[in-house]
Amino acid sequence: MERTFIAIKPDGVQRGLVGEIIGRFERKGFTLVGLKLLNVSQELAESHYAVHRERPFFKGLVEYITSGPVVAMVWEGDGVVAAARKLIGATNPLTAEPGTIRGDLAINIGRNLIHGSDAIETAQQEIGLWFTDAELVGWEPTLSPWLHE
Ligand code: IDP
Ligand code: MG
Image 1 (cartoon, rainbow, N blue to C red):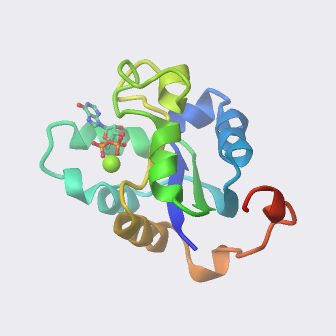
Image 2 (cartoon, helix red, strand yellow):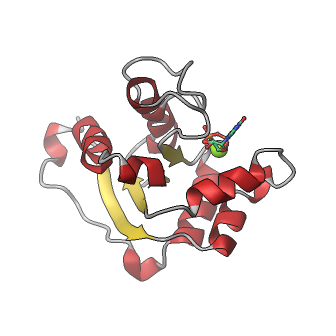
């Protein structure tokens, strides 16, 4: 079953939006299979954002993601990688559509609340970087027949 990596960034935790954000994924019908609150180390931040190492915003991005607790999650479901990106909205919250997490709840690209993997392969890498196998809990929601034909 498809899985994606989602992280509520320090601004989301500080602003008390953890419940609001998790609720959106729950209400959509995806299944939570991993969840933890952690302070992100410099090494983890730099590995996670390695693809952006040469970008001018990299240093500030690493400072942002290590500036306070982050809620790291793995969500499961058919099409969850692309669907989560839709729920999250565009990178710049000012252009993110209303109805999306960033579109509804944020105003600045450097404080955009949430991370979501951008492809199935990236999701697998990121899940491996942030979670051990023992931290992931596969389970079958009893609600399944009401979510899938
Ligand atoms: P994404 O989070 O929507 O996938 P990416 O382009 O992968 O966006 O960028 C990763 C993160 O880097 C963004 O979520 C945002 O926190 C930060 N970022 C991207 N572009 C800028 C920028 O121009 N200024 C400041 N931060 C940026
Ligand atoms: Mg990205």
